[in-house]
Length: 454
Image (tube, rainbow, N blue to C red; front, side, top):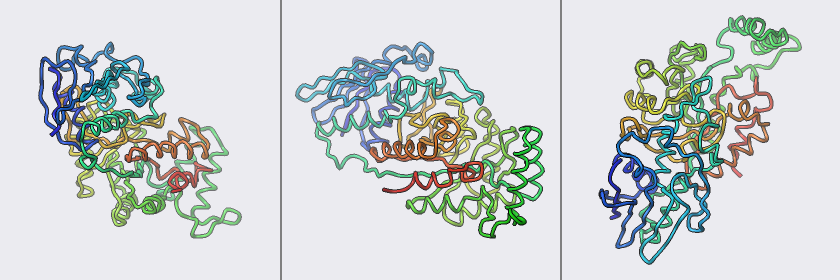
């Protein structure tokens, strides 16, 4: 049995990081002891030990006292010592020694993992964008240039290498396989939900956009969709609503031997919450069709729920009433998340899998990992019964925030997917049903190309 000896203080915080690294990621069972005389983390097995420097929590006196701006790391460098495999040093020093049955690591892997997984950086740093979101450029990971690296996975791999040296058998470790998790947020179910839709779309182009050409294009598309006349006519097979791409998404998922997951809005009064909610008949038909094909569904909590636990609870009850299902899978609209308040509210309504934690303006590993992991409430000092399955890439990021060409988008996402595959992780990819063709000219086949297996 592996024994972990923790220094005194911050037991919940330290134990959480150990739990994620050793149990959740590596699949190892262990026991924990606490010693006030210990000045480092000590992992013991069969008379051998790994000692990891305690370079963060030892500076603070009580729970929560580290949640201050001064505690945020300002720089993070890649370790140069050959034995550290170039890992990112968030806390500690680039030092390593090995003598007989003892390994000493100067990089505080425990505090580094805790920093990335709990996102306490976002609780302390109140920098926000126009939607109240913590922006990627404010994060240490982007400022220090390692957002593209799953650094917590790197820590786990290094620990595994050392544990193997101590005599742990390979068979003791969790076996993983690469998993594609294709998601779709149904923000707007159909482009033409009714024949009256044309009125609002034309008025929007004329009044809001001040463009006659845009209004004419809406009229032309509407006529064509409903069968058309003369030059604008199209055959029956081409009259599918441009946002009705659900079967295409499910087909692509099935081709990769997986299921797609579709998250639906059930309510919302903010201007950015579309009114095609789950109670609308045509939206409910889409929902039922997805369930009949055997794919997954979830709830897309509305814009204001990130800051309103009561509103989240109301929407969760609506989802259960309308579908008869518990909203186990969830993502916040516009990826709005208040750490840790939103997570606490998710636990309260019974969500078990959250897929929100990715940056809208950048691809990469916001939580430093491509593995599911339990969330932690840094204010209450406890692990939550909600697993985060971090969002790695999203269509809107590629086209609008990064302004990639379709070719650049395919290259960027496939590169990230290869990184996730190298850790046998879960590649969570968000692609909206509206991101094909119409309004996305030239992007019709981008998702299919991303998912193409070589």
